[in-house]
Image (cartoon, helix red, strand yellow):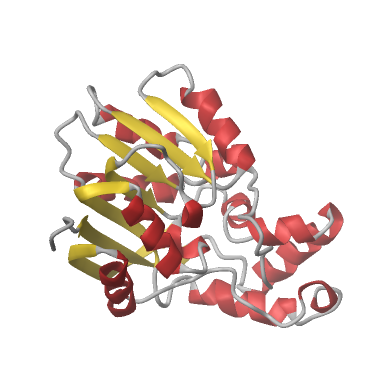
Length: 261
């Protein structure tokens, strides 16, 4: 299965906002790594429905957040949640071609970068959007992430009638390892780089809704509703109707190099 390459997948924002409790719970530790004074301008790269953006704003009483996401429905949801707060603005953009209009003090991202194929272009874009000496702090899916889901997608995607829709299986994610990520960050203009993997288990309250709103966002755009339901049924059956999902998170911290470095 491959998602459309011309634009990021549009998501079911309301459902995702309701079911994405694990991602929000994990984001607190990522925000803590930012070490904010409270007056910075922070780019929330992949802001989604704005729940984590709201947590970021709580750390920035005299600062502001620029939320960027490639999904129009996510941006709409975030604006409905936080649009009255003068400290936040939202942009619907592909993260590999950021245009924020001003250099930010830090880039933060939670559960987003694994949806982007070209990490070299991604990191070049975030570096260009960051002032020299500014920070990048992010967490996303890493090497070995949700291996059971990946295997089920390969098996069911090869079955009819889905094989005729998806063709050869191609993962919609980029689950990178720490070593290759450190190289890409360095080449994009970062220093003081640290990347590492961390295992987590998600126990969503609504496993099916969580599965549909996260892993299957690209497939939902390619299948009519009845076929999408059948696809979800087969995948969940293949995995034994899971109530939890095994994750491997890729953490990264880095500093934008100064011009003379």
